[in-house]
Image (cartoon, rainbow, N blue to C red; front, side):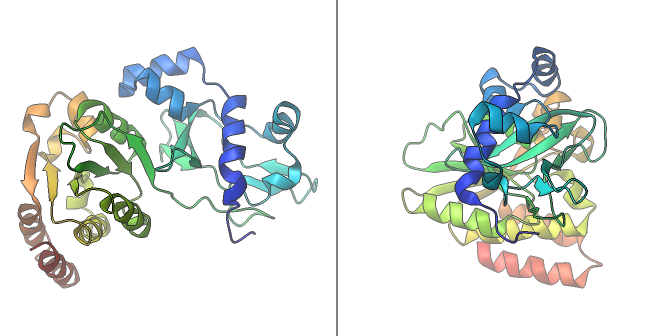
Length: 292
C-alpha cells in the first residue's frame, strides 16, 4: 500500500471522474426532495456512483495514463489480473465530491439510499498499490454574512447537513468533517482565515454527542481548536427529539426550537452529562480554561 496520497494528481483525476459520471435526473430530483439540495450544490458535489470501468473511461475520455492513478484513493492493483482497478460499491445512490477550501476535490464518498452506514469513502486502504482516503475536511460556500469585517464560519458533521446550513444561514463558509479526526486540518484552515480578518465560529454538534462520550470529546476538541484562533465561538442547540442534526431539525419542522448558546453554557451542560466520567470531566475543565 502507498503511504502518501498523490495530491498533485488527485484533483485532476477526481475532476475527470466527475465528468465521466454525470448524475441522473431521477437522482437529482430525489436529492432535492429528500435533502433540499440546490441545483448549484448538486452541480458542484454530486455525480453518479463510480464503477470498476473507470480506468478504461479515464484512458479513453481524458487520456489519463494508468501510472497517474497510482497513489489516488480508490485505485489499486488487482492481485488476480495484475490490472489497475477501482474499489467500487454495489447499490450506491450517487457519489459525493468532497471539496477543500480552494474548491479542489480531496475525496469522494459513495452515498447509499438505505444502507448503514449511509456513506462510505472510495478508498483502497490495505490493497496492493492502494491508498487510504482518510476522512478529509470539506468546505461549502455559504450565502455570505452581512458583516464585512468578520469571516463567519459554521462547523458541523455531514455533507447534507452542511448543505442545509449553507443554504439557510447567513454564513460565509460551512466546514463539515469527521469531528474525531479533523482538528489539525481545521486548525490550519482557521489560521489561514484569521490572517485576513477576525473570525466568528458557530459549532453545530449532532445530538449524538449527549449519548456518546467519544463524540462529546471530539466536539470538545473542536472547541479547543477553534479557541486557539478566536474567542468568538457560539453553539447551536436543540432538544434531541427534534432531530440528530440541524438539517434533520429543519426537515422535521422544529426550527423554532433551535437556540444559539454561549460556549460556556454548552460546557456547563457537558459537565453535568459527564458526572460519572472523570476523564471527560477533566477534559471539559481544560476546555473551559481555553474559552474563558
